[in-house]
Image (tube, rainbow, N blue to C red; front, side, top):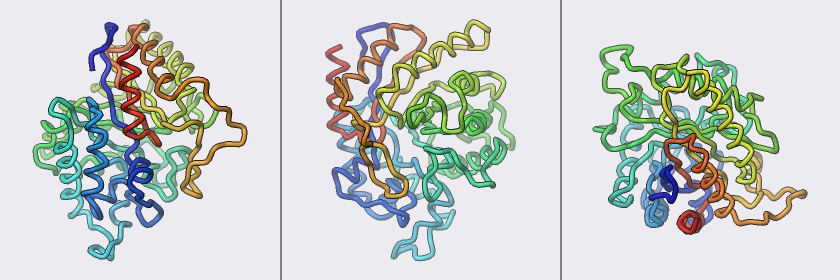
Length: 355
């Protein structure tokens, strides 16, 4: 999507899991630990139809249905065909299917992004909003090992590098996990067998963080300054993220968060620690104030909620316009997260076009 300013804007898709639930009556609970990726096992046709809804908006970047993928989530997935769960050796075929479906439905000029959630997205209950991880995944080194092991699953997909344009690490709630993801990438393979891995910078990646509740900090208490340092400082890796961003966060919080992001990016640039301008990736929740309850697994409207003055898409389009005017960003990628349907992304596209 061409922008009216000097900073190009590209349109991302919306919330896949909530769209499957809202538009296709798919039910998710503790028996479907893979969430939207469960349809790779149980109902690829419905998954294909839902992703096609977003592809036909059209969007410029389509995320794969792999956000909750992990060895643990597959092992907990028990179906008639896999009554004891799905063994590690079987996982790559489902990941291949996820990429193939996205390739099949996307517009000819659209790009694919490999969707990867944080460790907390694979816990039961999900803990990406709280960042409260178990003792076995509670440090940078432990989280690095977990993310490295998951990437190895995707490394088994045939010719994956030319098929995906980006890797998106999404909804990251902790500073140590940001650092773990940064340390995952390096120019030099650690072993000869890892020479073709996604970890060596051939595929650009972004990291987007979650800022739940009413505060402007990560769930672990980290400030935006700390977040931006972990995202962009060369101290953690010789491969700098192509993009940094915010997702699964209330759209009303974006203006203040963006100002904090831009101030922190400017600080790094002034200190000579910024090699190049990053892209900005924004995909807030598409809710009108509803908050996800991890116990009931439903979206609830707080009693104190006040209706917004402007629509979701207008608020988000205004944020993009402001980001373009600041000239901090190489490009802006914008879409929606939970509760953002393809209809919402269509209206967002129109709002961006109208300026």
